Length: 93
Image: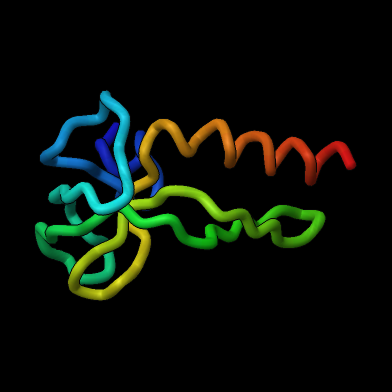
């Protein structure tokens, strides 16, 4: 199975590591699916939209943003709990 398939949507962190707490303004390098290149980016607090069968949920959380196209390309591990909670609230209102 390709790394892209394991991580979903080609979200791949190549520099800066997966572990450790990320903070707003921290920089990283990752492959951006839109730009198709190794891109630098920064962690920013932004609205993140989760699509589900019951509609969309928007939450404000820390994400990694491509400096080239301004798309979200990385989700730091500490944001995963926020995303899971939002998904659970959507499934179990």
